[in-house]
Image 1 (cartoon, rainbow, N blue to C red):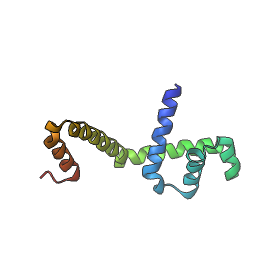
Image 2 (image 1 turned 30 degrees about the horizontal axis):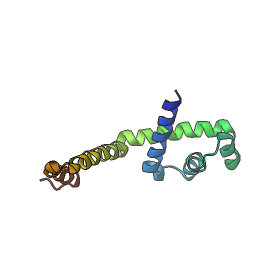
Image 3 (image 1 turned 135 degrees about the vertical axis):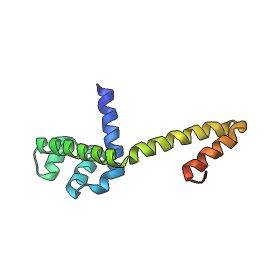
Length: 114
């Protein structure tokens, strides 16, 4: 359960990195307090002049908004897929006989394989 919460928090942070600019200033501020300053919900509420419950509700709504943006645009999924492809290229480059395959993958990622 704790690991799942941690994974969800990490995902929310990555979504915020990708789509944070699409949020309102208050939503961005709340997430900055939550992620960058590591404030509790009560502390965030004090900073924003709202209740702990209001902060909780805001974070849930923002999470839904960020997930909706990801579903529509898929930037995080694309980024993760690119990182996985780059990891495979690193492995291929470590094996001198696989350099041509690595170069082909990199060309595909750059859109130059045509």
